[in-house]
Length: 104
Image (cartoon, rainbow, N blue to C red; front, side, top):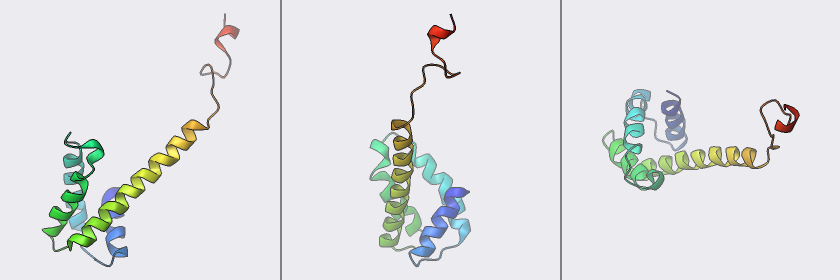
């Protein structure tokens, strides 16, 4: 549902208002297609799927491709934030914050 609403916001921002039910229908289809081990990170498959499936509902290919790239950039930004948080966290030697040598 969150992905459908996110796509709805992106399509409205791109100037192509489509019904929310289209996004609610297509979001699970996208996730199933993106799980197929066809390409690395679904690159290329994602764009073609957006163009073909949204084209069935009258969305121009340019708009579908734009929304696909915006979704991809959102995913990459989310992953980058997580990577930065992991890289700069303080290492702990055990779950309780003390070293293993203190527990013996």
